[in-house]
Length: 204
Image (tube, rainbow, N blue to C red; front, side, top):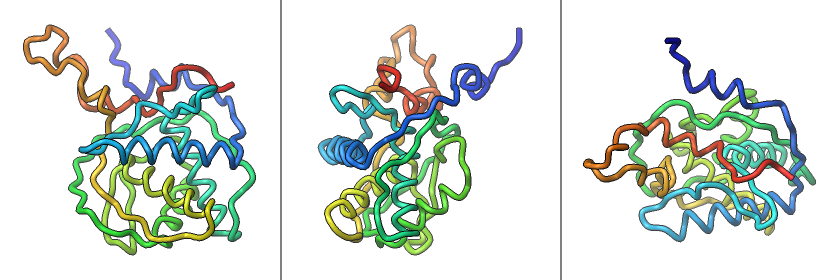
């Protein structure tokens, strides 16, 4: 037997296929994520972004939105388009306690620029917000950048109210919830977290 890591498996299936995402598509992606997160209590991210005739994973959404916000911070305007490719979702586990607070717009824009400058091949499990002095998980960071993108789309950057958001989706969290289920224990927390790379169909 050979031990194969989850990352090794992704290296086998992920290619360098790229997709151009327009500003209008980014708006729809951000709206979908924000609506899904805000509509649940406790707050969970969606399984994927469903635009009706096209699908994006949360990893797609995150990398596209950090590009858009980083571009805004540098130029003062949103880009007409960004380019996304397949990247890994968060590959480590974090257990952070997020206290509801208001995050400055500048902190959100800076976090996007820092993430983009890191040349990441994956979504980080956590992101540091320097002005706020806190560390948040990837789901919470995606919420902040999606919400800020919508504010920029409407006119100007404004502070965002942050609240605790689960790192994994409600559906993934429900895998084998019954302790008597013979499947119980087959999906650990890290495995469930990999829904970040899921979408029902390849980019169109």
